Image (cartoon, rainbow, N blue to C red; front, side, top):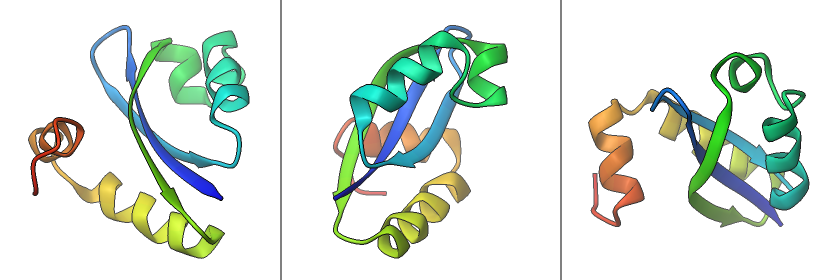
Length: 82
C-alpha cells in the first residue's frame, strides 16, 4: 500500500508526498532529512492521508494534488470535493 500525504509546515505551507510507511516518513521530515523543502520549512503535522494500491497510482494522484491551488488542497483536507 502506498500513501499520499499532505504535511503542514511551521510556516503554514503545505508539502505533498508519497510513502509506504507514513510514520517513518513523517519522522524523516521532522528530523530535517525527509526533503529539502521540509528541512527548510520544518514539518509540523500530517493534515491528509490517502491510500493507493500501486506506486504508479500513488504517483499519479500525488501529481494531481500538487497541481491543485492551495485553496483546493485545503478543501480536499477538509473533506470537500474539489
